[in-house]
Image (tube, rainbow, N blue to C red; front, side, top):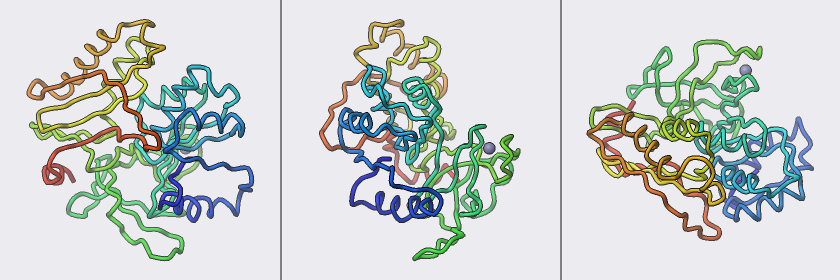
Amino acid sequence: DFSVPKSTDEECLNKGLLKNLSSFFSLDNYQNLYTGEEAKRLIEKMEKFQPELLIGYTSVLMGIATLKMKGLGKKVKPKYIISSGEVLDSYSRKYIENAFETRVLNLYATTEGGSIAFECLEGGFHVNSDFVHVEILDKNGEDVGGNEFGSIVITRLYPGGTPIIRYTGLNDIASFESDYCNCGMHTPLLKNLEGRKKDAIVLPDGRIFPPATIPMPLAEATSKFGTYQVKRFQFIQRSIDDIEIRIEIDEEQRNKGVTVERLIEEIKKNYQKLVGNDVRVEVIEKKAEKVEGQVSPPLIISKLDKKIIDKALL
Ligand SMILES: [Zn+2]
């Protein structure tokens, strides 16, 4: 697992998830790594530890997956990988799964409410309804109903220092799935966990895209050419009608298959189709300036006035 030492992250992990798990599992065989460390150092440590299960932020897993594809960490063969703490988009999921040749599952855990939902092997996103009661509400505090998007509001059902009752501060967007999962667990299902409200993309015509949907046009372009050239990307809404997509190319993949120029052209075409012609779309190749000890930059940055998002959304 990864978390930032001496932060609320680590505190939450030790006192929340791990404390809950310690009555069921022995945690002697457990290693906690610092996310700010270089991916190369992380994979070296994992090589010695050889974890059966790997839990981490999507962006950190992406960094390690890039190295794994280059042949590092040969003995790092987890049975499963769990992504948490950040949106797990379809491109990142496929990229990490391809590198490690195993499934990546999504976990929705929060500092305030602990583990809220987890993805089962059938792909259902199950609410931990014995730990937490989840509601999805609109901006007036009413149930959105059906499969509509809304804000996640939680009530924690187990004791803790501060009672968490109908807590609205998570600012995450999701919708419920009306069906039951095939796996046999009949807990409520989240259809999608769409990310933080503040990172939603709002367009001039009033359409709103929750963060998790943003990388989809990029994923479509890469899968069209069957390439994993893009090792990192970042999406920035500079203003309501101006969007910038930054991609970082894996040098070892650069000359394999489709050219980078053609890939960029396809990515731009897909985003332009999504947002319409009133919005300027720019796709730029960028080399990451990696600062040692720096935690991964956010996937989606919205520079929109927060009031615009609040007004448009929920
Ligand atoms: Zn299931």
